[in-house]
Length: 120
Image (cartoon, rainbow, N blue to C red):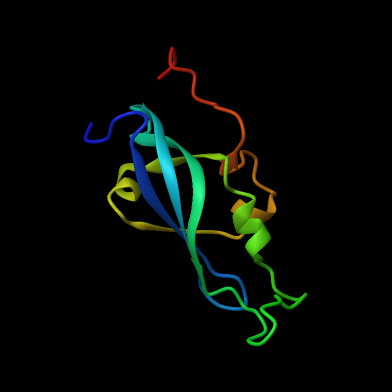
């Protein structure tokens, strides 16, 4: 395993709302490795960069019709996520909007730690 627990890395995500591609980079901490799915559980510590958000050029206000807002990206800070090994190597993970808006049986971003080390 090339990454150690408590190591800090950058995680890159992208979504495609109707307004165009939105990218976000987070500083994250590797919490643990899940061998069963060859995935890493990470905690998002800080939103480092966000690009592609639609806003009014002069005011910076996001139009009410926009599906993805800065608040939605900011809300992910402090949450946990399971990512494949490739994400730790800099790959941008393209995600569906439902990872932010809900509607998934298991949330992609979560506040609790779902991995039970005794079952991994």
